[in-house]
Length: 389
Image: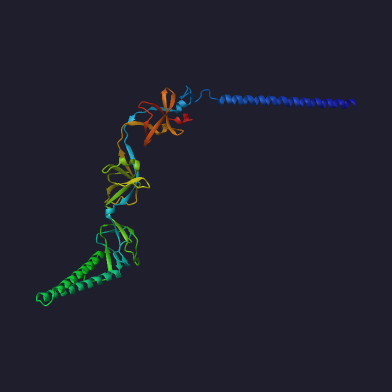
């Protein structure tokens, strides 16, 4: 090989070594620069003051902590806040003012004189029924009347014969017995006509029965129409309710029954009238507990001459129950810790300990604390969740 070739190979090898050295130097400088950048960024992000420090059971908020601006501490005190028991309720027609109209005899509805929701007066015609049973009742009454007349004539004749000595007394006794039986059958036939609602002594005895309203009220249910057959005398044709007075019926839970009594003042609000409170008194507390819902019925009677309260309207019954003075804490101060309810109590400035409490009932945005707090205790009422880890 010539000397010139050896020189070329040495030059190429030197250039390759120089390139490798330059690349390695650049890689070291870049890595070192990147590490310095990351370290500077971490140093800038790190907060030299921790949010809080734990020392045993104590939680300490050090000076300069951002948590001091986010926590709010306030004392608790004894308060006399009546408990308000709220019960869901519904408006109902008073049962004593509600009548179900049933047909006294079977037959065909030939005319319906009212409509659903119509106001009716006492004695107003409701429905007309063509009834073969009514015709049979009239026929039975006529037969009983004739039989009674005949039995009375036979009894008088037997007495006349007996008085003149023309017949034995047993004939009089037999005629007397026949008369009593005829009289009983006549009374039964008359009572049947009265039960149907027609006059036994009416001259015009027809098979058509016109039923009238027994009360003044509103037709709240209607289950028949013209041309319908009323073959079941136990089936309701319509319901008439007098809504001048209505019931607001609520269901009280078993554990609150002791707080409700007859004559107790209540306030009732209705979804239909937001912002209005209707005041009344408890009229009835059921003596029986529903075995399924474990609740008992509570009813409040309201005058309703203007018709504002309509059956099946939703309502809420509020009953104020006086309570003894107790400590109340804001709902925001109560923290769940495992299965316990706790609060953070300040033992000295910006030092807190966790304390288990026994909450009672809620009242607005506050909760009655039955055990665990004393009047004057300072607790975290806002931001406590930041320390609840």
